[in-house]
Length: 435
Image 1: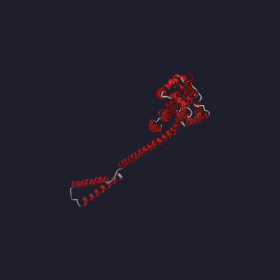
Image 2: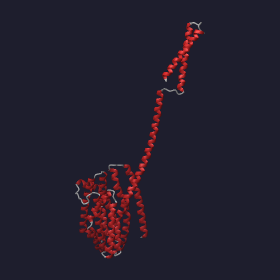
Image 3: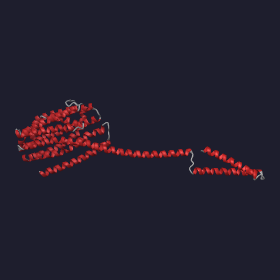
Image 4: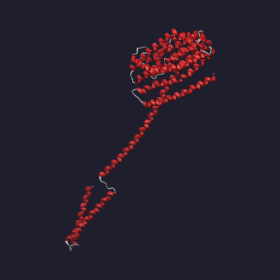
């Protein structure tokens, strides 16, 4: 286009020069030569000025060069890219929000599916003790009162070994988060050995010092309760090794986020305990000894079923390994704070039973009924604790580590804990009103 404009300019200039020459030759032939040259130069200059002004007008009204057009296209394309990037960033934010919402719902579903059966799992133990209390209380108030110090010796000492449960759940869940099955099996074998040793120690302690401990606990004013309580304790003491081995197997399943297997085992155990109490105590007249045998049978069956649950998962439930010094210190560092906390808690409840026992037989019997109802309500928070132990290691130490999900899981567990707290308080208020 610039080349055409230049040709047009030259052609137009030559045409004007020729025209001026004709004018000189005709009308101005009598003028001097320098005047004629000046007139010609002036005409050419004016013609150039008109061409330049015409070019500026053309540029003003949109006649642009190819370079200017190219720059304008680049600017438009960059603006278009910016608009696309803004739209894509908004879409990415919407997708992220949608994924976060879906992740929250998925975690809520997992927590509910785990916590629901776990609640029943933790209720089975106090429920069996409550069944013992109800059945024994139908026969003798002395045996009902004797259940107070007897359950302190059996159940409360059993709660002290919950440090095994916590250590097993945490170590198994952490090893699974690292996707190391060999490490999981090694932890299970080591903790099974520790559980077996602790069970054998408790069996010997019960056989040698059971009666002496009960006599010191009940005091000289309630010596008549010691024979019945000692009968119950000696029978229940036979289950100590099986009880603690089953506790480790149960906790290993919970560390694998499986609460249905242990729940099935304890549900069967509760049924066996209830049927055994009715048959042995009500129909055969064994009294407190019958309740102890029924509880012993239910605990052995539950331990066996929990071990079978581990075997179905591909682990060796009857493999025992002696821990090294380093492994023992690792377990001790994990379980020691929990053990101290449990000791203080159980000491508090044991003192309650001790002071209630010093008030007489009927007061001790009434306290035994109320403390079993209280225990049934207070364990509702334990499944929330177990949920945190099972879910947190994967998010904190696993392959797919996510601290954001840790916060989300923590908030969801806190909400479940608050709802369980409200439930517990309401049930306690109802029990106080009924009493």
